[in-house]
Length: 116
Ligand code: 5GP
Ligand code: ZN
Image (cartoon, rainbow, N blue to C red; front, side):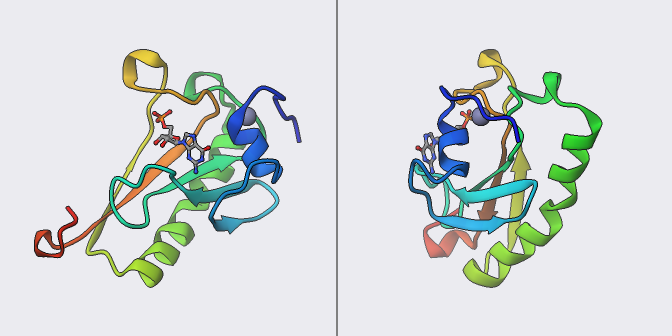
């Protein structure tokens, strides 16, 4: 599995930087975002380093997106949201700050819970 030694998410997937793991298999790693937009905000990455969607081949993309229903349901089980946003920032102009492809899974709650 290709790793970029300067990449923070490669270090996370390799266990060199600690993370709160949500899901892992041979191809994909999911962990809580350090800065929780809502409770359970999760990042899903391919283990194979790839900069963003523009540089990602179909095999990596297929494996990444194939795991999303399972991970979204695991988040649902654990955090009991009533909905979830799935999004990806690609290139600086779109808000990408870590250049290892990732999906944000952002659970949504009743506004009365104090989380949106
Ligand atoms: P982007 O802006 O590239 O779409 O999202 C990068 C995300 O990575 C941000 O939401 C940021 O909070 C998260 N992040 C950055 N560094 C770390 C880290 O060391 N650990 C974790 N868990 N999340 C991080
Ligand atoms: Zn990486």
